[in-house]
Length: 264
Length: 342
Image 1 (cartoon, chains in turn green, red):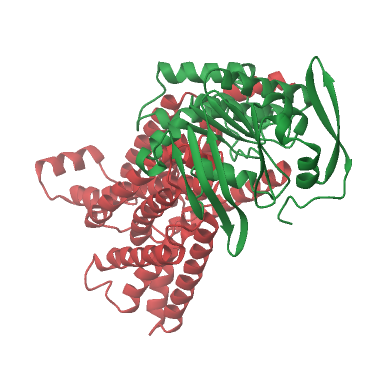
Image 2: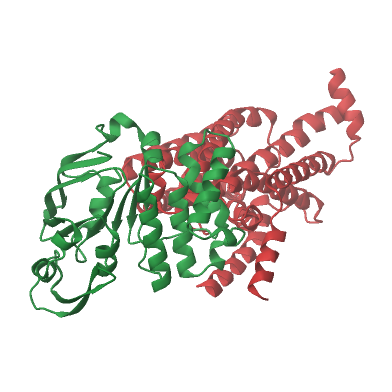
C-alpha cells in the first residue's frame, strides 16, 4: 500500500470533525475524495500529506511512518496540490514549476538534467509549456491552476494528493485535468483527488470515498458509493441519471430536503 | 501593449542572475572605494595606504584606519545586513511591506544602547555602546521566542514584534524622560538618528562575526522562502519545516540587524525599499532576492553615507535621516502601486 491510514480522528478543540476513518491507496489507483462542505475532505488530505497530525489513528507510507521516512524523502514521495492555488509573488511559470524539484535538490545546487527533464515533462503534461516565460500575473485563472498542477507533477512523486484541482476551470480544462490525473494513475502512481463535481468523480475515479456525517459514509466503486440514498444523505440533493457510450453519469437536480452530511 | 509584447518586455527586463550579482558587487566595491576617498580632510589615499602598509603612524594613515576604513566597512556591512534581512522578512511574511524591524529586534537594540548612554557608561568603555545594543537585541530575540514559540504562525510573530517594538520605544522614551541633563538627551537623540561617523575598527570586529552568522542563516533559507511562495502547506509538503524556518530567520535577522543597530543606531527604509526595488530584477524569486538585496542595501547605504559627506550641511546630516527622507517617497510610490494592483 502506498498510503494506509487507520482509524484517523480529527478534532478542532471540543468539536469532532470525523473519526474512525480508514483509507488505503494502492499504486496505480485514482481515488476521489468527495463529501459536502465542512465534511473534512481537505483536513483528511492534509493528514494524509503529513501536514497535520490527527488527534487519533496513524498513517503509514509503504509500511513506514512519516517520522521513519524523514521530511525530505516524504516530500519526494508525496506531491501535494493545495486548494485555491495561492501564489504570493508573480514568479515566472517556469521558475514556479521548478519549485517542485526542491525536494530533490541539494543545498547550493542548481537544476540538473533530471530536474530539467522532470520540469519539461510536467509542463508538457499540464499543457503550460507555451506559458513558460510568462509571470503568474500574466496567466488566467485556469492557466494558473494548470501551472500549479505542473508544479506538483514536477515532484515526480509516487503519490499525488490534489485538493479541488478543477474548481476554477472551464469544462474543457476540467476534462483535460481529469484525463491528465487518470493518465498519471495509469503510469502506476496513486492519485487522490478532492472533488465536488459528482459527475466527473463518477466517470474518472476507480474508487470513491464519501466523507460525511463525521466519518466515511460510503467507500468503493462509484456505482456503489453514489447511490440515491447516499447522495441524498450526504448532500441533500436528488440526482438524475443517464448513460452515454455505455458509461453511466449523474447530474445533481434538486434539493431533496434530507441531509446530515456536513458539520454545520 | 499586447500580451505577447508585455511578455517580451518582462523577459527583456530580467538580467541573468550571475550578471546581476556581479554588477551589484562591482557597484558596492566602487562605492566602498569612494567612501574611503571622500571625507572632510583632504587625504592622499595612496600615500595613506603606503604608510599603513609600512606601519608608519602618520596623520594620513591614522585618518584612513581610524576614520575612513571603519566608516566604509560599516556602511557596507550594515547595508548588507539590512538588505538581506529585509528580503528575508518580506519572503517570510509574503508581504512587500515587511522590513527588518518588524520583529522588534532593532527597536530593542536601540533601547539597549540608550541604556548605556543613560547610565553614562558610553564614555567609560568604547565597546559598552555596541555591547548594550547587542544585549538589547538578544533580550528581544528571547522574548520573541517566548511569546511566539515554535508552533506559532507568522501572524503571532508579527504581533509579538509589534509588542516588543512598542515596549522598547516606551522604555526609550522613559530613558529620555528621566534623563539627568539636556546634554544626555541630545546625545541619545542624535545617536538614535543613525550614523556611521566616528565608529572605530574594534566596532567592526565586534559586530562582523555576528553579522556573518546572521547572513549565513538568512541566505541558507533561500529555497524554503522560494517554496513559501506557494503558501505554508505547499512549502511544508516540499519538505521544509516551517517552525525551524521561522527560528532560523528570527535568529539571522536578530544577529545581523541587532548588530547593525547596535553600532549605527537605526537606519530607516533600506531594508524595506531595497528588496522591493530589486525584486523585479530577480523575476520575483524570494531566494535569489536575498543576496541581491543585500548587495543593493550595501550600495544604497554607502551611497547615502557619501552623500551625507558631500552635502554642504554642517554638522553633517545623520545617515538615518537621509535614508528616511529618500526612502519615504519610495514607500508612497509602493503604496500607490499596490493600490492600483488591488
